[in-house]
Image (cartoon, rainbow, N blue to C red; front, side, top):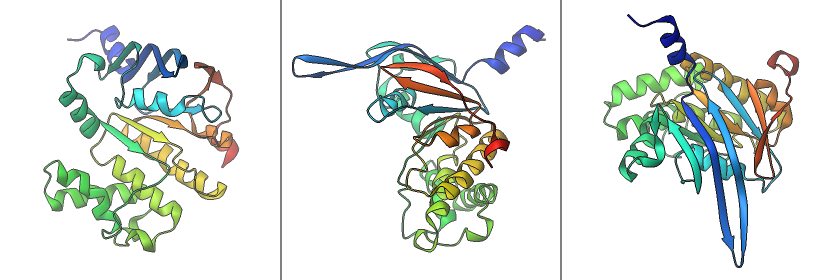
Length: 245
């Protein structure tokens, strides 16, 4: 039988952990230090916001956290494993099955309706069409799109399209969701609605979420907000969800 201490460790251990992460790029004779000793933990069911001016390195940090590129120094631990020692194939499989990505542009397939857009990655990974569509319908319902599941992207509003993209990113039940300015093209009211849906589904699905945004008002949805400046992270203040919605 596991001790209470062991159980507590299992439940509080981060899904993704970065320690001392550094990233730099050569530009002629100069070296541009983008990340300088980053420490970051993501926990299941928690949403962490990342703010900072353009060019501060937010996208670089998201790429490292999403196993898309390796840092020049430091460690990345994903799901209890050293991500930097994984083979390229293992990293690719981790991204495909255990990581979800949402970007500013939704990149939905225009010829498919909403439910089939969500089901597509499941079918690519071998799930039957009926099971994949059932999972897609469940996610769209959770995102408040139950009555829009058979509409194609061109028949949906911008906010609805982005909620479909979020549902698609969660189709494979990832451990971590990485979101880069997911509401950057939306008006403030629609942005809040999309973030509310993302916040709710992250809690319900137990997904760890790291989201970069320029909209400071949306930090009200975060469990923790971090500011990236001069290559380093610092805790930033944020309001509660109830204060902003």
